Length: 142
Image 1 (cartoon, one colour):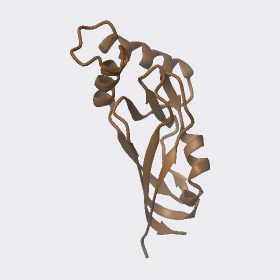
Image 2: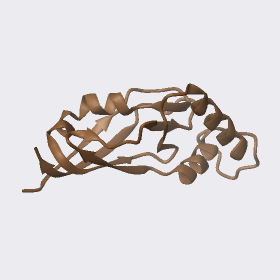
Image 3: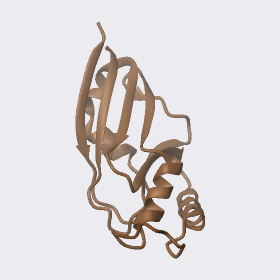
Image 4: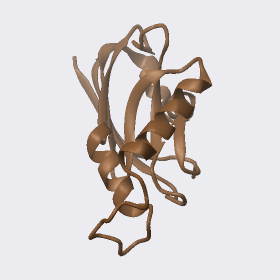
């Protein structure tokens, strides 16, 4: 019989950058190990940060991603929206480009990432604070 779980997860506060969060999420979601098959949906409840699946092994990937995102949406561009500081509007642009949600399959109690994949929090603000995710797990228990 299919089972559903939904809850809010609060991530550790991180500085601006691209941060691998797979292990932190798994520590907070031990229920994943109880599913034979299913899906887990991660939804970030913020507009100036994003979620992405990408390379988890070589840290240079994260450095390059951050550098090129800053080229695409620099802080010194002529933005109309500047109420929350110079990193806010670039953060909104980056969040729109990357997105606020990802879905990952579950197989035999494990997230079914590819060999090199992991889940990232892309923090686009200098001081974004603690970020909240709504996590929904759906599937068949073991």
